[in-house]
Length: 64
Image 1: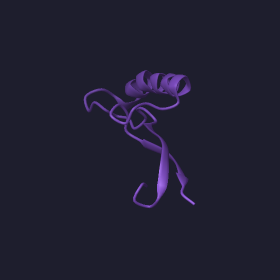
Image 2: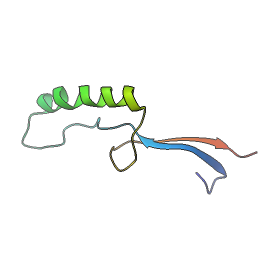
Image 3: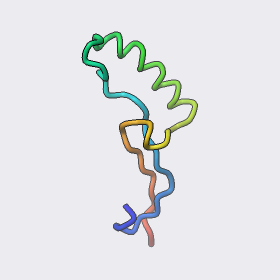
């Protein structure tokens, strides 16, 4: 983004949304456990530092 002459305003992650994480635990159990946590964290914080989540969110503004 910076090489394309955009100013990065905020950089973060959307949390944990891409289930399954553990191959030995059924998908629905993981979804029931992780989905409410992801929704709560998203509502509370908006985004998290990039090291914590899996989907990158970049808010940037084009330079004039």
